Amino acid sequence: MNEEKEPNEILVSGLELALRPADERDIGFCYELMSHNMRDLFDRNTQEKWSRAKFRSGFRPDRITIVEHEGMSVGFYDYEIVEAKWIYVHNLHLSKDYQTGVGTKIIRLIEQAARDRSVKAVIAKVFAENSRIIKWLQRKGYNLGEKIEPENSYWVKKDLQEIQ
Ligand SMILES: CC(C)(COP(=O)(O)OP(=O)(O)OC[C@H]1O[C@@H](n2cnc3c(N)ncnc32)[C@H](O)[C@@H]1OP(=O)(O)O)[C@@H](O)C(=O)NCCC(=O)NCCS
Image (tube, rainbow, N blue to C red; front, top):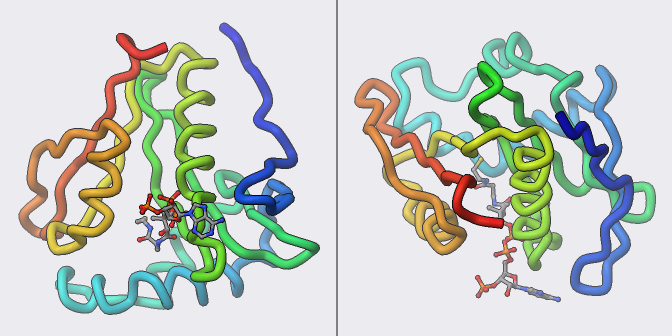
């Protein structure tokens, strides 16, 4: 199995960005960014609604990569390998000013990490009403899968076997 390490630095749209593992001290940044991006969607689409306690109990710095620009945290992403079959992307969030092609670069990095580990597909969940992200993922080769009714979400999946 090829265990390629992900790069520590990426260049996107002229920006030099650093990628580093998260630690417990990143919880405030991740909370604020995710709350900014997702609170309304959670409030509208889940029974439990946006919950600080749920965020805190699910915060897994060992899975998270922080995206930094000039020493400032500007985004994070979070994925895990499930049963050696899938990479499940839990989160991908960028600050508004950095939604300039950085997301494309990161999703490609995640897909490359999957290929390097001979993982066959990347999966994620999206809220059904989040048509902007659904379209974004479809443009990147993801297919809409099963609906998760209680969460008003869909699974999305990209098979990597055929794509080099
Ligand atoms: C979803 C997300 C990660 C996508 O990242 P992104 O960087 O915005 O996405 P893209 O890589 O497609 O780049 C966005 C646009 O910037 C454009 N762009 C590229 N270089 C640019 C530059 N130098 N300056 C400005 N815009 C630029 C791209 O062309 C693209 O526009 P297009 O869609 O018309 O092609 C990001 O929008 C985000 O964090 N959203 C909020 C959180 C969220 O919903 N996350 C997903 C659910 S977990």
